[in-house]
Length: 459
Image (cartoon, rainbow, N blue to C red):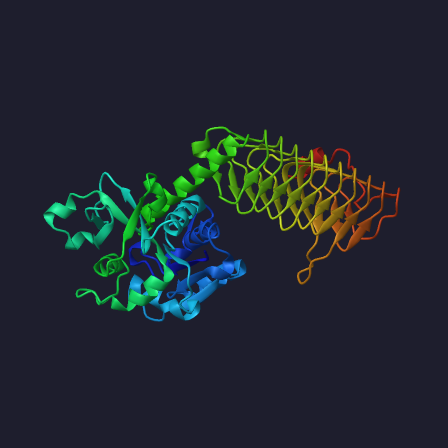
């Protein structure tokens, strides 16, 4: 049976106190709505996922467009019932199952949605509603049941009687409907007298009135249903998502020392026997191989590490690739598609930007290597600078395999240093250096005997 998913992502979220639409706020390294769409992919292909957008619709749609889902604009935000009715245009009242999700529930898992779909598909009910029990249900709508255990109605807290306020079973707002039944009755939702909005929660009572059953699906893991309304909720969700990710990595064979101190985005993956030290931050689409070590305080963002790579403490690497056996840091910075070859060495206070360092090459101390291609086995001395910018354009430096660049060398690009050549310490190199040549570009040392004593006599 086909399943279509509608993700409600039109609201602003005034309690977030932000200019940004609520679903665009991030937790665990992704926007809230990205988590929801990822979970929805467990039960529906991209072409059967529809996001209803409203506030900052262009930004939300641009974010989700690469995933291949569809969109419906809700030009006026008149409540959840109105949002689902707006989706009719894209759905053409398709048959099968229709699942309704909220774009601000980032902890919802694909396995829970699979269970919801299967519960609805295997029943004669018109709809299935996820419920949970909270020790303190303040702020949530209460679920009322009939004698057979079916959902009779959902009552928002402000409309509850004193007796209903004692109910601890709450409405998650996550439904799976028989689509044809929903389309038949959705126009019966009436505007709320106080707000003028159309609430999807009214469908439970409408369906019951027509003799249809709405069955509950109780979820013990209440955290999955956490909706984000404030920045406090956002922080809670971020913590839980990262905790979930860290636990999954540890169960797969990764050692995380003091996991409560480590920040790991949900997209990150790491191989067996890798060790992550305290206060490391692994962000974006970072991929780490087996037998790696990530030092304390290191930050890796959208970076690929092959096996047996060591990243020493307080190293920053972004959008780069490190090959097998390389050692980076401490206090190094790699960015903008830096590539480090197998068994290469990058030491403290070395920066690579758009630079390729060949296998076994070394830059151990205090250097800036920008827009450079450095051959295998080369040695880059302390204080080496590639002068890649002339004030208008960036230029490339090429250093051949096995070259030796002495300390405090300045290489003025564009320039090419030949294989197995030497550049003397302190040189400013502006012309090409042939293979196996020695290049010197510095002022000759001058010694003036007794200069200090003569100066003192003058003073």
